[in-house]
Length: 203
Image (cartoon, rainbow, N blue to C red; front, side, top):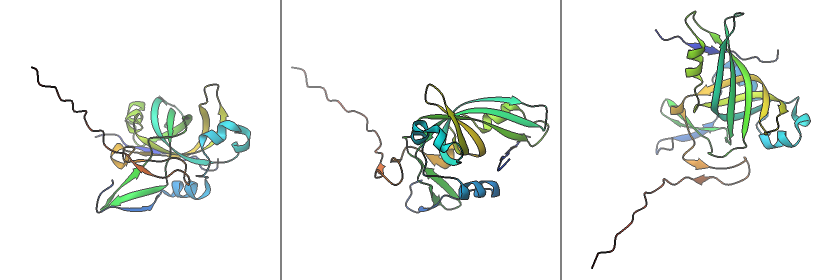
């Protein structure tokens, strides 16, 4: 039986013909609290320009998981995660189709940020390997966190409050391209067509 993992929130201490747009819906009580209180109008480049100004604010960013380092801790049955994310623009809406939903994030964003965060082992069999699979590179994360510092490469260190991991089946970055919201218009991403070449008849 596959072990399940539950995220710990450290709060305070499909484009289809039958789909429709709806506001982004947090899935847990802890995320609802963060979403209601955190800023969605602050972006990584804002933080890089003036880190001290945003140090006491909590922001909500969407990011593709780039890499992970998981470590089991003896106290509290926790698994410590060190994750690097690639920021992506997100309009905080979701396309709903029947019982499912998809988030249409932009393929563009404002660079890397990282955070240390924690998972709780749901069973004794849960391991750091399970945690790595749960938050595997390529998945999307909705990260609620406070900026701490910016390193020499421009990667932003974040103090996390809550993280939601979104499976690959529930988001796409291949259908709409856009920038900051409000701001640049949305542009559908056209599928790349194969290049067709014709050979001249030989004489």
